[in-house]
Amino acid sequence: MEQLHRASSLLQLDPATLTILEHPRRTIQVSVAVRMDDGSLRVFEGYRVQYNNARGPYKGGIRYHAQTDMDEVKALAFWMSVKCAVVDIPFGGGKGGISVDPKMLSHGERERLTRGFARAIAEVIGPDTDIPAPDVNTTPEIMDWIADEYAKVVGHAAPAVVTGKPLASGGSEGRGTATGQGGFFILESVRQKIGLDPETSSVVIQGFGNAGQSIARLLHRHGYIIVGLSDSRGGIVPDHGLDPELVHQHKEKTGSVFGFPGATDVTNEELLVHPCGILIPSALENQITKDNAHSIKAKIILELANGPTTPEADTILADAGVTVVPDVLANAGGVATSYFEWVQNRENTHWTESEVFTKLEETLRIAFEDVWAVKEQYQVDMRRAAFVLAIRRIKEAMRVKGWM
Ligand code: NAD
Image (cartoon, rainbow, N blue to C red):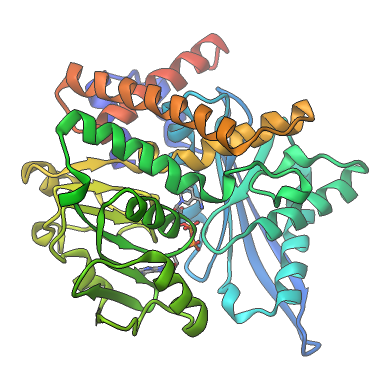
């Protein structure tokens, strides 16, 4: 809301538009009863928030995390509305989640929980109404279970109800690495604007999951030096640059990046303030706060995670001359490629990875230039510029629909 208000004061937004944007259109909370492997029954709370659909069907991922609650899902759903408008795809914003630590569940329990959740929300999702996707701790396999369960409820296959599916069931080439790939394209655009040499650019990445791993591999391949990585257990800082593939193999064997040979183990707090040129938060929200923003050494922060920087930290970083590339632009490669998957499903077609990434690069290049133009026009940071751009677009869609 603070981010919305900062942008709306610049735009001198009318009270009616602001009021609509301050409230999700629909919030749904469901209880999902799951038979556990030991025969007991447990009930999990699940959420779906449909924030704004002025520009198209609600779109947004589903998160499985112990700390997930309705407030978190609402914030994420609002960001999705902004993000889809920034990259100018015909979707609104939504988000979902279940309060659960999926690592405590067996494969079968995860499947029963997912299918139960899909049945509980089936009547409010659909290819033309609300289209879920993966987020933290959810995978292509989980998306496939949702599509399968939805098909049973409506009585026919409808793969476009969910994106991020496996290739075998209508997924798009490139979706698995799209968020990292998109972040890379955006970083390239930033590099051209402010002049940055990969060979002398050191990078720290917090979070080594879908988003973090894919950008780590791309940056490594393009000559950037990775000087820190982490996951939920903690971080590693090497004597020399890290090879993400070797770290991945270590994580596969041991369950964590922690203890990687030739690197020193650090806490996640230490990792964030480790000396580097580019910091890429790729884990969870509220990691860069007023308590650590002053100590951050990076000159560029590329937000692959959603909401990693608090508004207070934003102000501190702007004053220190740090370029923060906001989540709603930096990680939009995921949702843009989800849109491409949805289009392919609707058209019963299949694009090659190179077609997907060509379209992705073009979409993100235009979005970046649009944001940069607003930044220059108002002389503001990129987050505020992205919000101004998005709110203008959403407002126009609401106006032509006669919502206010
Ligand atoms: P993921 O579950 O694949 O990976 C999350 C990673 O973060 C894991 O390595 C985990 O160990 C680590 N982590 C968790 N808590 C941590 C902590 N406190 N400190 C350090 N690391 C921690 O999830 P993901 O899909 O890569 O999503 C990561 C972020 O990117 C989230 O904010 C998500 O909303 C955002 N995002 C993801 C996508 C996508 O397509 N997957 C798209 C846009 C945005």
